[in-house]
Amino acid sequence: QEQLSDRINNLATSQTLAMAAKARELKAEGKDIIGLSLGEPDFNTPDFIKEAAIQAINDNYNSYTPVDGYVELKDAIINKFKRDNDLTYDRSQIVVSTGAKQSLANAAMVILNPGDEVILPCPYWVSYAEIVKLAEGVPVEVPTTVDTDFKMTPEQLEAAITPKTKMIWYSSPCNPSGMVYSKEELRALADVLVKYPNIIVVSDEIYEHINFVGDHASMAQFEDMYDRVITVNGVSKAFAMTGWRIGYIGAPAWIARACNKMQGQITSGANCIAQRAVITALEAPVSKIDYMVDTFKKRRKLIIDLLNEIEGFKTTEPEGAFYVFPNVSYFFGKTIKGHKIENATDFSLFLLEEALVATVTGDAFGNPDCIRISYAASEAQIEEALKRIKKVLAEA
Ligand code: PLP
Image 1 (cartoon, helix red, strand yellow):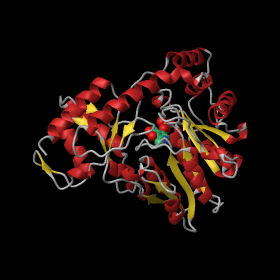
Image 2 (cartoon, helix red, strand yellow):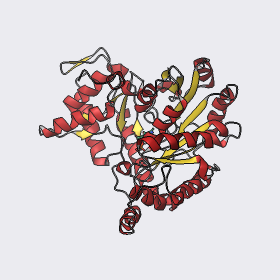
Image 3 (cartoon, rainbow, N blue to C red):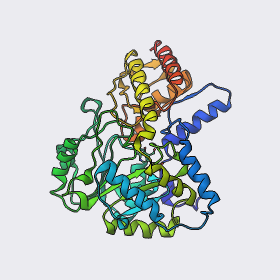
């Protein structure tokens, strides 16, 4: 164990996965845990995509693929970017990776030198800060609160910029807050960034289709930003394909080339069968996944209505993704059923142990006052979970 590197010793364990592991442990002890901690659609991958994968196996797609993805897949991605986002990329600007997570890791590894700063509006997705640290960058957190719908203002962005700022990373729709930046809000952030031409933007759009408020906007749609935006996307969330591990970027060609070089030494490219299946997924009309988005919309209403019935949860109406991120600071300093609640981590553990409901502490996302509750679960599970939470908190 002493031989382990500082790099791995200093890396935080993913708290969403840690919470899921703890919930599994309790389940193994026979406890009836309701898991609302994972960011994973509870649907099956649609049949038309599964069939494409089976076909690919039978067609003997078994060799190494081009490191940056099959050209047919790149073309499907190019068409998708044009169709859904009005973004024009050519093949030299697309890199397919082993999940959007690897796309993000590539971006950090190819852009950051030790000590370079990366602005992360909080709350941000758990892995951002750790990926940045792995690449020896320095995360610079910009806090936002429930009162501003968890949106970073242009003033906050400008105040966070220093001569060392190399990148800014955000997701919209946001995991964990569900916040969605409108085109006007992105433009206002872009107006700050145009003054600092060396800052590269990572726009994580993996929840693009799970949007309840209307049009999805991309930072790269602005002509004066296009040359320095890495648009990250993938199929995990939209197509219920988390385990298939395919993500991709559209980026300036020099960045795409660097990402290609990076993964050429690390993975040799993404899985061949999954890549073939994703061609079919991306070529299908977006309406094929409407049923999932409609279901998430119903569940969103259900969970917000139920949360609003419980005193102490202060929540926004999430505009996208499948999470609510209530502020629970009302409970800090209270002792409930013998548990002293000092912070969101205590509260989340309390819910797990007493209500048998797994959530994730906001600390994992750079926000210590909130917890994240995923509503990628059935209506029955959501109703039962909130009933249990209400019951244990009645003793607060
Ligand atoms: N970006 C965000 C905001 C996410 O929530 C996730 C998954 O939870 C990812 C990226 C990673 O997705 P993938 O499964 O494609 O690696």
